[in-house]
Image (tube, rainbow, N blue to C red):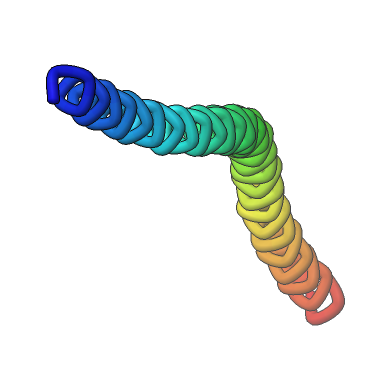
Length: 107
């Protein structure tokens, strides 16, 4: 009877050991999956971070191009205004000279 009790206790202990080992296996698998997920997330973060840096660099280049185009447009507008003023002055001078010529012809 004593042996029988010891045998039952040993079997119960073995069942508990197997149960704990199964739990350890399950937890190890969960840990492995969590590490894989962590690696995937870190990789995705790296890719996203690099894409963000690339976009910032592109944004800086585009802003510089925009400033250069604005400067060029401003210069062209200034030149056009100046050209229009010169054209107006030359036209007025031409009309004045035409009037003087007409006056000289009629004298």
